[in-house]
Amino acid sequence: MNRLLLFLLILLWSLAYSWFWNCKRKPFCTEELAVVTLADSTNSTVVSTPEATLADTIKKITPEEQIVFKPLDVYFAVNQSGIDKTAEVDSFLTIAKKYFEKYPDKQLLITGHTDSDGSEELNQRLSENRAKQTQSFLVKEGFKASQIVTEGKGENEPLAPNDTPEGKSKNRRSTIRLK
Image 1 (cartoon, rainbow, N blue to C red):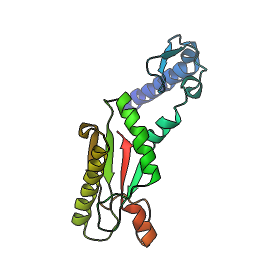
Image 2: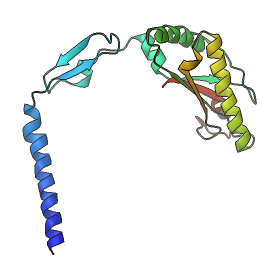
Image 3: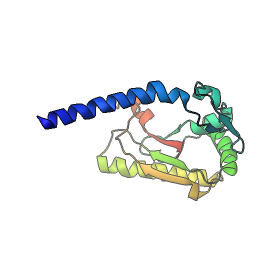
């Protein structure tokens, strides 16, 4: 009986404390919140009102940064590790080079993928080769190898069902994203 009473007392105390913290104390907090904007990391904004929303305090990122932060899929032909270079890839390369000159401590993560044709072991090796081929391509385009990390996922993370040729072509890819 004492265990049940102890459990109920702890439960009631935690509910009362949560209510006090969220309803009574929090609106009167006087701590200031420092927000560093992405577009200009040398300047910071201090916000002291608790009613300020995140959208009010964070400066919008530039269109160039939107391109770098959005994952890019690079596609491959069947059983190949050669990259299909498109205008989207060229645009990404140009903007990402500028970004990495400005932020040399950042890294790209390249994840290789395959469709479901072939054995699981073959697809795993092929996905790793596609990621490494994409890395080699980026190094040839002027990126530092130390800024690129690769991994292979095989056929484990498809974008589309593998039951149609169109779906399979969407799954033969490498995804480039900011790590």
